[in-house]
Image (cartoon, rainbow, N blue to C red; front, top):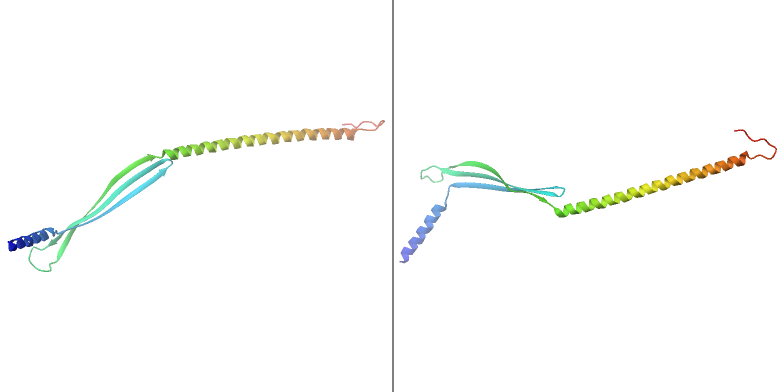
Amino acid sequence: MKKLIMSLVIAAFTIVGAQAQENKTIKEETTVKRIVTKDGSNVKVKEIKSTATESGAVIVEGNNKVDQESTVRMSKDLSNEVLMDDVDVDKDNESSVAKQIEIQNAELETSRRNQQELAARKNQEYKDKQDQMKKEMAERRESLQARPKGMSKLKN
């Protein structure tokens, strides 16, 4: 009985070991690219999975020689797969941008009104100064044209 069990265990290991040897080689290289593009409040996310696979078989001569030379036949395969292609709209960003634009427009309007008031004040001051200078000039002219009694008046 003991010999039967031992022979079955040895046979199982031998069969499993012989079946586990495959004469294939596979080299697989996978790259996942994630591209995020922000355009204002739109966020575009695209994921691309690129797989480069090299598969081949090890070919040996069919004789029973030891240390035989082997040749490998390889085939290359390149595949691209789009995993995700989404466009998200960032509502928080849109609302904050809208608020900021409103604030800037309000500041611009206030600044424009202040500049108009300042220009109107300066224009009024200029007109007042011109009127005052005209009055002073008229007073000086009168004082210079004033003659004592008996003298003839100046001709214009």
